[in-house]
Length: 115
Image (cartoon, rainbow, N blue to C red):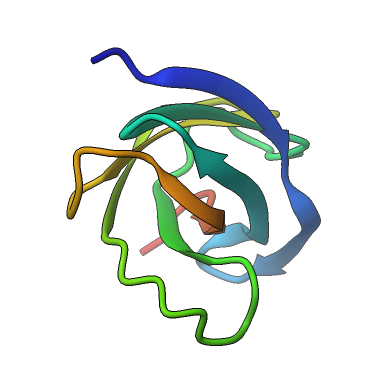
C-alpha cells in the first residue's frame, strides 16, 4: 500500500549554537492520526543553516503527555533534509491498520560536527 503524504508545520522551533556542534534545533510536529499504516510527512517551518545536517533524531510519541493506553509501535525514517523542511516516513509496526492517536514527532537536529 502506498503511504499517504501530508504537510505539517514544526512547532516551537528553537535553535541554539553549541560549540563543536553548530546550531542545534529542538522542535516537534503534530502528525495526527492516519487511516493508513504508512504515512509520509513534510515537516515545514525549519530555518536550518545547512540542507545536510549531520544528525536528525526523531522520536514518535502521543501528543498528550499522559498515558492514554496506546501501545502502538512506530518506525520513523528521515527521507530528505533541506534548510526549510524535512521529509519523514512513518510506519506502524504492530498493526497493518492506521492509528487513531494524535501522533507527535519530536525532532532534534545537529547541523555540523567539529572534532
